[in-house]
Length: 224
Image: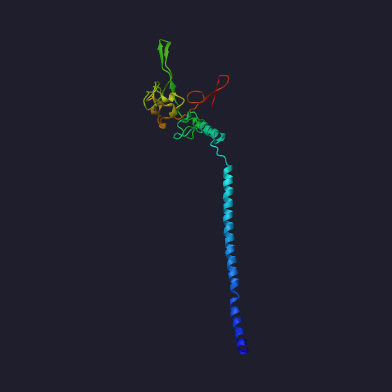
């Protein structure tokens, strides 16, 4: 009997020694799973916090459709100095750039005051040495002393007046009344920009080729 008990003790101790590390492994695995869940929760919470901050900051921005006075001022100043674009700003009264500062001084080249401008003449009738009739001004681009023929090419709005005699050459000022009862049927026309003469004449006298600004005293101030 003693021999059996003595022989059975080492066997139980061996089985106990083989199983005593399993509990530690289970505990480490559970702790690792909890740590992974904690990291995932922290990352998710941090992302949600950042999204909430962005949404809060976006709510503070008030949408204002007005771009501000600088945009309008620069837009108008660019047309006065450089001139409006001939495709996107055809409704500008400065269309054609004849009355803008740089084109009026340099034209379409780099040589200042080398253009021909628009020539204006008047037809006079005399009886002997007496002037009997003086016609209204007319355009004489070929400078032959006679009015140029008014055609559909140089009379976009079909009012019987040569387009170069008008200061405002924009397409908005050249509307042909097709149907007076329905303005949506009216047609906007404008002549080709190839017809525009070089505006940089070699003088600064205020006429159709040079902008003159009236003063409060009613006099004219030259633009040079």
